[in-house]
Picture 1 (cartoon, one colour):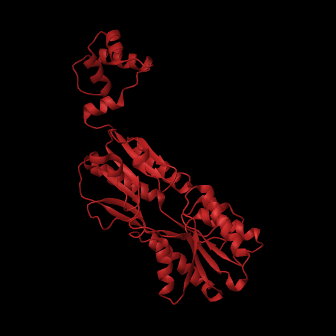
Picture 2 (tube, helix red, strand yellow):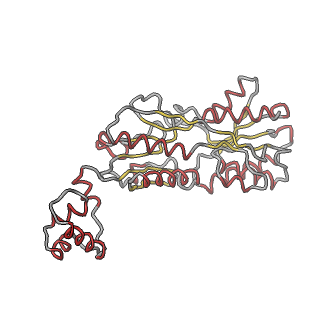
Picture 3 (spheres, one colour):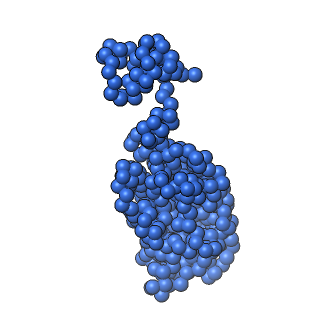
Length: 343
């Protein structure tokens, strides 16, 4: 157990309030020699300040709630690591709220309710809100949403990825490579269901489909189960790849665009097991730009999202809000096509 303020006060023969003010850097009438003695005793005895108590006394805790779901997917782990790094460099400690599934309910698992935080970053669908986690306290907490556009709520700050344009980039790439002239194009992903969660999102599949339709190219849809564990996503892709490998060339899509890299990696392995060649027999495109995709025998063509820029923007916006700049900021970052050996 670390030494207390009271113990330091007894050793240095000053009041507890004097010790507290010296160690917090506040102004106090004490000689340079006594200040040095207090600091020396605190250091040698291993004093650790109670950040919560000090934060409440100062009116802030220097603690940011970071809410990320889907940590079985390395894409979300990268967001967590980069956001935490930027917050730490800005002098904030992080209180993490995580769920294993991207569709996890924060309020079910929440450790943040009733815990004082100065602000929050949350990865959430447009129908999810920080109020689900903090309840009425959310009114007083600055928040920046990550990942998805919220243009229908002008009072909300967000930093999003332009997923729709990402889908357009994939379609443009496949059409320019001539795959639509050689056969059909397909999108592989979960079916959109329900009101709210998906229907208000301009997603990658829409961009892909709309770009193709505008050029007279029809696309087919291959559904994956609505699972989110990293093992299930890869397994879904593997099963679909093996299924496609059993089809005659006339019934098999010439190129497939997968909802994310994990499904694409599984599908790549599935078509290889079926003795098909990528991209000669079937071209494959993923989404997210995971490093894992670059370690395939033929590096995966994917769409890279500006994760570092997303986190940096979100942290900077949140810090400005915590300093009293209440003007909402909405940022939508462009994706980038990352051509590889699978197309």
